[in-house]
Image (cartoon, rainbow, N blue to C red; front, side):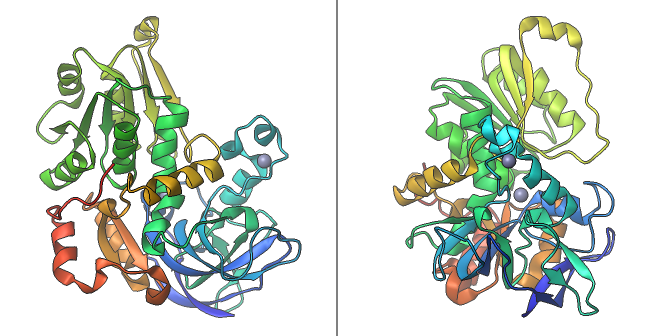
Length: 397
Ligand SMILES: [Zn+2]
Ligand SMILES: [Zn+2]
């Protein structure tokens, strides 16, 4: 079939919407009509060539939701009409990390993601000249339709609007999983979150729900910090005018128990380390470009501080996703709060530019307006207010 999709031709050249062809789903695969897709900082890194050479041409997009419209041979548990969220780690269940209960480290899923192929091998996408296009992180959902592995499509109930559900598949799983599975946050912990974009805001909401006593949000600019406070942060530090580590130490009585770095830079990883109290753990959630190195004062390891990484929530994404759906349905997690801009497929390149400039929170591309569900998209005033960071908070935590 012929579809419109946002294609990265090469780094440095803005991605653009092209007409491409999508092959039918192979064995173990499904085709999804995409309702909406979130624009994530990893898309910027891919578009800028910072995650390794040769990852182009590629159809971008890895955080989204839609409706199954066709299933390949051997697919159980999914049928046309099912509403799904994309899961960008379609784990195999059989490799060593999968058997050890660490599906986010699944070896074949990781290899496919890096190669820009589907876990079943190869690409289902071709450009107008018949040349293959890579699938971004095995999803490629900045497109009207996507073929993915069945394990990369998680069913969700009917009452979560798809434009909001889109955010579950990367930002929410990554943020909530980092709190629950990587940091193992305990009630009463003093927490700092460095970076309050689309994922950082999910970390804050998760820390609040987990009972953190103090949540210090760190970013630059009043708009981002206001959004963080509405999301549940107890204090805000503007890193543009204050020293983050010393302010965190002051606000947490001597240092954070858990510090989340959600930027992906050497300076902010170091700040997360410096902000810890003895015995504390810094969790790096931000995706750093290849080549970035971090140095630490090794003597401080004596104080049993730890620095750990987290990828895609560090747990079982399928389970985390279903827990998140439960929180949304109970009214304890408001997904719409992190959306600063509702756009269409053609608006993706401008949304990538906003992320490069550090503006706003999540942009969500509404790709099929009829499927995406009721949203404030028709009310220009509300969207403008949201973008300016002055919208009324929704049902929070
Ligand atoms: Zn992402
Ligand atoms: Zn595996």
